[in-house]
Image (cartoon, rainbow, N blue to C red; front, side):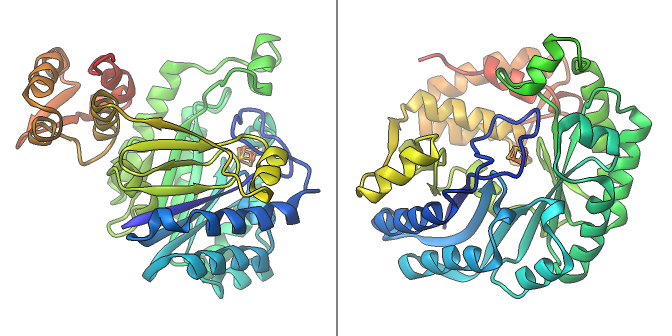
Length: 375
Ligand code: SF4
């Protein structure tokens, strides 16, 4: 099974914290759709022997496209690839794009999963992050979307300066009140060269507080687990049967094609990524060139990635798999290095699987990088 990710590199306005690739100018929208369709055609042989189980529209803001434009892209996938019956087809959408008319039209299209970028239900948080929607739009769109879609994920951000623990709990409870099946939740991080980084430097916005973020992560974990959500990846919680199939296959090392500017691909041996410029991407694709750079993964790269994704997910790190795929020395190294985290109750081993404890989950990225082998 394999997945196709399609990057829609346009947004209405720039959120202050964002370092994804997008443009706020829609001038090249039609040319971009044409190029995306052409890249799907050019790369069809990469998936000659694979069946596509998931199609994911990410961005940027895919809901900036019309339903007809999204359907053209889905049709191009079906025209060029073997697609399983009932694939998971996700559209990332922002609340300000989702009127009832549009939600109904998407519900009649092959899209069967919505991932809605709510981030917060508080006006002050949305303003601080320069989101394009307001709190009323977030609530209205969720109450409409839940009438037409049975598989909805929402994004929430924790650790926002001046968002108290009480307000964070209200955010989670408000999300739950709409009966969503999945929540993705990330700590607000200050990426270099973003507007947020510059405002913090100038003292216009308070810096994020890591301790507060960790406390809010635990509020999230406790609240969602008590509501029957399974914490299956560091930032992802789903009801049984509602894990993101697309993202789970990334974490389980399955191949995927990333279509569009800045999109990444993985074929089991190599990673590649497309140029991060709409103009260059369109020009290169028009000239039948794939504007991408490739990296062949070494055995050690693959080991490091497995440790990182394994500790972030419910599936953990199988010691037997480490030995089989990478050799006894890798296993020996891992078991030795993991001991200090096991002693601190941050990791544990159960049935030969190394996992993060509740206490260790928030720290799993840092722990994983200390278990890496350096090339
Ligand atoms: S809508 Fe998403 S991709 Fe666009 S600027 Fe905001 S966070 Fe970034």
